[in-house]
Length: 308
Length: 262
Image (cartoon, rainbow over all chains, first blue to last red; front, side, top):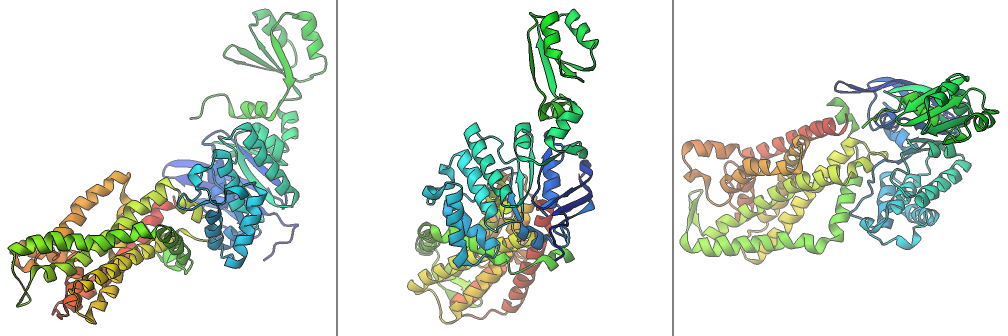
């Protein structure tokens, strides 16, 4: 296996997937380095999940190629999946088994010897803080506990690549932060992580690099901060209850203006002094000046129209 | 199809093991139906209907209604247990529980999942037939050692109905649609498959239809085994059931793979 750590962990070239007449993914290429945390960002239906599902050998690509540590996902699916830890978007824990048995049965699918599975399962339940729920039925677990158990299950085979498809969708802030903490700890151990999300904060918190994808194509990629700097700058002015004079004044400045409903967004090219200037000229204008985030990049690139 | 053939592997046993583990955690309730069902049939049909029908003419001999019907009950159990497992139960695992999705995230392939499900449903049919065989033996309705042949017959017959069930599962859009298959395919076999009366009393056209039904051949075989009466058609029936079992298994693999992998 030509898997020296200099080679990329994942290589995808012109990946495409068509379902009937729907082109879900239209020629996506990217590399993921070993130990890197890469996030796919995109609105619902952008093609994120289809892309990771092709990497995970769930769906054969319609065109293009992908490999994981040098193994082709088309011809070596068993070997590829042996290296992957997959956290799906939907909860697919086995409701016919209790918490511990879920891990024991899953370990068998990987061919882990019975003598090792149990110790490994106990260790992982400890890690995700579910040791006291071993005998609980899946239906008795909260959403956050289920996610933690799914994460533990994905780690059973000591994966080299962890694939997390919307790992925290639908969780409360405590549960979300608990998952983030685990993912950061894993990253420190050198595991390669590919995740999809539409939470910008999640991407900013976890990812070394994000790939923004929409309509089945890559729009942009880079580190979260570099994308913010490059695409929207440092500062955003949000204003409401404004008059034409205010809008005209901003249009006179260097930067980009966007009107959404009753709100105005101004992305100044040069952010120094904007606050002082607005204080002087429009002291009573209702407004908020804040740091630009990945969310601003996302909305700029993918628009504000609803997708579902 | 060649790819499916190439992807078949012993790893399917892992899926079989999963289903078996679920079954044996609830074995007390799972064992009860095959234990009680023949007793129920024997009481209702054998003792009730048997009072009205004193003898049945079968293969040029006559015998009581109860000994005639009892082997048919085994054939029915094989059909029901295998078919229900790969329809309702498999559909629940596939669609509601997403169990298949979870399994194919491991080194197992879709083919392993499908084959494992078929093997488990077959096993369940064999378990049910074996329990019934014991109950009927206790009621002195089984000739030994030929009665033992019921077990391989249940295995091949179970494979046939497991395959048929999964072919149905590959086609339905909602779980309620299984009722259509049961009404159109299973119930006619239940009633006309040589189970409750000898089919040669049927009019000619109905007889021809009956000979096409897989259950007719399976009940012919179980009856031959349980009564210990060799049947001149037995070899042909065995051939029919064997070929249909393999054909339906292949069809189930092909159709389910198409359904599961877009």
